Length: 163
Image (cartoon, rainbow, N blue to C red; front, side, top):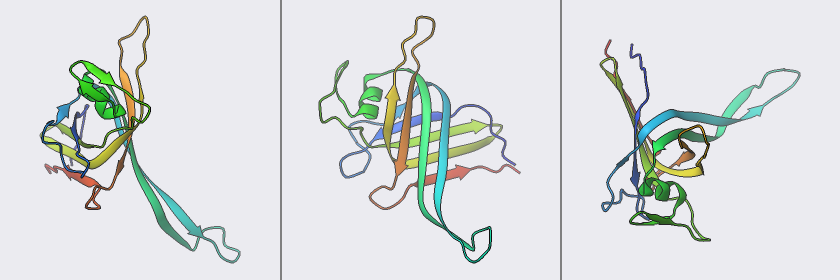
């Protein structure tokens, strides 16, 4: 049995237009990470027949992997990845055609002598917020969606089972 506790380490690796890791920018480790979640969901087509109350067949027709996280150690490359802005030194510039950048996501959790590692090969941010409050730290929140890479793969999950 692998019992997990705590928050993961999150790394984002920018992707080139061809969908491979950008060799000019290595993995970016997110700092002061909290409230990470991954949600896997599927939509079904249900077939009903006769006087039955329940379906006689259920088929999956679409699926999605959505995630969200909060992060309090902001950097220019982090903003650029999530929003698609271009970074030059400490400045991130947005234009009328700016779109979120594609990146690979790695979540690594190691507790109680067992590891759990998620890799999602291709992701894009669907929303990003920066809350400013008089009585709180600035903790950015973002949501993202995973999708198939150029090879048709979504990602991998590796879970150690120490039992």
